[in-house]
Length: 570
Ligand code: ARG
Image (cartoon, rainbow, N blue to C red):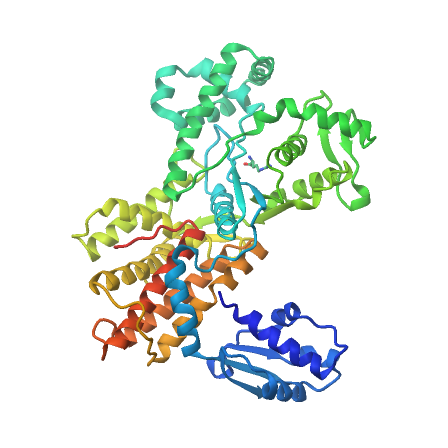
């Protein structure tokens, strides 16, 4: 894989050292200074030389001039010094010779950075709370989490995806109470998770009027904790029903988990950690509760035990982290949740550090912003929250209607509408920096023309259709580039690995989404301006088909990284 920035920065580094032998500047730093100019006339990559003037004690204009004269990189057709900038123009023919054969031979592995060999990453994501609705607030953790898993897998890490189900806690006392009062086996079996949520909602309504219900719920949960056979059976049943429902949504997204060990699994693993905290004198009693004081670190205390001795959310997370370290010996443990939980993670990460676990710095919290929806009114059975399932269903319906108009004779319509509808939601969601709050506008997400999922999936289908019409072409023929759109497409393709690295570094799937838009745009410009199947001669035709196949491969690889289905026909 040629890494353009790497090659260029190494050549610049050499010259910088010739200009000043004692300059402390390495290629990686230079690479981070390189910019993509806003305008093609200013080159494909540029180095703002004012960033070097302090180190080299020289004027940017002079530095740029010297570098322009002396830097030699085979991949560059020309280098210019303009107003203290070093503007570099990539050589299309070089790219064609280097990149195209590589994409075609590596296929699904093209663009994969070699970062993770022998290393393990554990990812904790999605993790809904059982018997509560799986709503659009979970979209972020589910798709960002899975995308981060795919990115790390692509880079060679061994990945363990964990769904840390919220399958324990007082809500089960409430649900058991509600079930005993108003539910029965047949209706729950029939109604599934909707019936459970309904019972849960009814419980809250009734408990408002009759607070004695809360005592009953507490008693039921206590019985569950004590191992009461009937309650255990009910609890397992509720979890099973919920999980079946979640799995339908995961299947639509192409997501599978390696582990579903939820909160309940850690019940017997907490006492040892609490004891360790106590032995290390880290626990303080505050109004009867046990806490770890974090004032020194500018944070409120981390709560470990309630007054009645029961454990809390951080206690469980600490025990789970220790278990995962022992089980998987991770090099990195990633947790994807809404930004609302940032303090929780900062607190217990600190506690793990104070406990002397030397892997505390391997814990990474990846937060994201809130989601709201306007434009479309979604009625849900629970009234005030929007279920992910309903959002997907709406998108699928709308896409099916659009497809019916565009392409009524398409085979396998339903399956494709599902891929495109779900893909539209995923793509729209992942188009923004994860930390930004998102307001969903359905019409925008589903449009086939904008910067949307349907548009990029349509582009992918276009590459498939061109290739299927071409029958075969000579993959070893010499390549002839004749149009600027061909070179532009190659440049975007050549940036893929670097983009994947950036996305991993920043834990930011939107970097891939934006790249997909660049690539789809470059392919479509090429497609509209260059005749492929009717090219003027065999060599040009071969080159354009190879470009199409390369675009298809890289689009497909990038789709895989963000849970977007590769639709061969739309
Ligand atoms: N179940 C939690 C929720 O829905 C998310 C769990 C996140 N993971 C963790 N290890 N705390 O809010």
